[in-house]
Image (tube, rainbow, N blue to C red; front, side, top):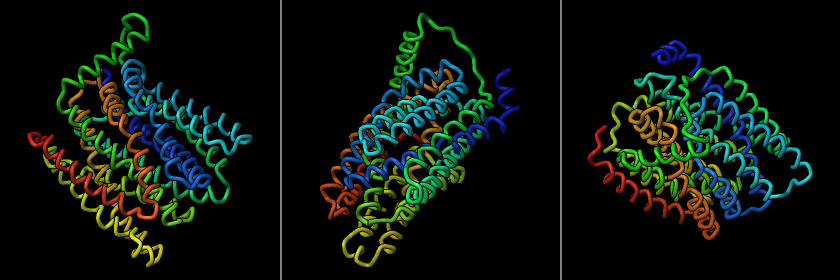
Length: 417
């Protein structure tokens, strides 16, 4: 009860500091991803190389259950501080190496993998902390704000990154990202998150391993979690890689967007995520698990005009008509993705005990991320093969999302919460 009182009394301060720390951290991370991905596309001009490298860098996310077990055992505030400090140091080392090896794709891949390892530890810690610093009735809104503010930071990063990348190059983006992680770590030192120290049964390694087993066992026995993982895995195999790899390829290679327009395009996607996250309060009370398939069906239908936007006849009309029609479709797709994610995430948080929350959230992340590298490589190859007919992969996405909506209708037909 004492910890609960402290949480209520310091709710505004702690939640605001978490959000502010996320803004700084995600801004630095987004600048880094934008700079490195643009640099790789510029020096290779190939979507398959970019997608393969991006996929490999995401493989460490399969270690998320370890991060979840650590988050449930140690002080979550301290973990957040340590992870951001480590990210800042890694980027600083990369800046020094980049001065002498500025064309090494392998070096970029190594740095992205290291940062991905830290991310797989960091994200379960943040996700498990939110229910401890807000009341349960405010959890959906809090998750929406955290996701929305994070997307807002990511939105400004591509716009700012497009300007900086063209004006001062990748090295300055690296420096800004390094400073952002450092500032985030300093900010997080002032956060209070309730923590009850638990005894270790034997050495630390065996304790973490046993905790992971308990978390996995709990996940397997809970139908609402297994269904959430199936849905997340389906989206991470097809839709998320499409937005990450496909849209960037379309903007940069198919449409030959300038640095500014490329940054604006990625920024619009992030802004759409902001709108979706911040509007979750409007939809949460009316949303039900057994109607999620309608949102997925909407995404499927929007793929049709999106394919038209990059057809040869449309591209002959000029850059801006194609760009506008493309993003008329992307905006509601990105909004819907965020709304679905926040809603399902909140349901899982509400039904999971605190001592298992980190492991459960991490397990969902790990399982869904298992298929992400496959999806990224698949989309890279697909867009490379149909580089002159990029509307074909989008038509394929229309069919796939239609099938996923049918799957969701079947999975959640008996769920009304």
